[in-house]
Image 1 (cartoon, rainbow, N blue to C red):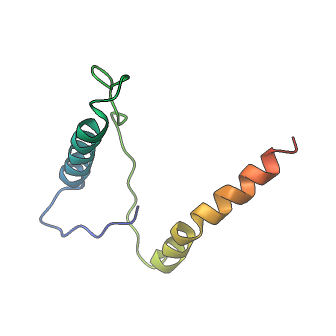
Image 2: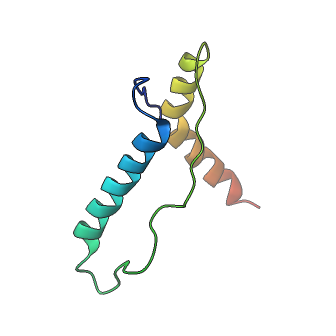
Length: 80
C-alpha cells in the first residue's frame, strides 16, 4: 500500500485508523458466521513504514505488478 500522508498527521495515527476501521468492517461483515473472530486479533501489533522519495515510480510499478509476480512465484513453487 502506498499512501501520501500530509505532515500534520503522524504515520502511527493513519495506520491505526486504517487498521481499526478495516478490522471493525470485517467483524461486521463476517461477524455472523459460525466461526467468528471474537477474542482474536485481525492485524499484527506493529507495522512497517518507509519514506519514499525519488524511487516512488519504481515502488508504484512494483505494487501494480505484485499480483502477477505472486502468481508466477506460486507456479514455480508447484514444481518443488
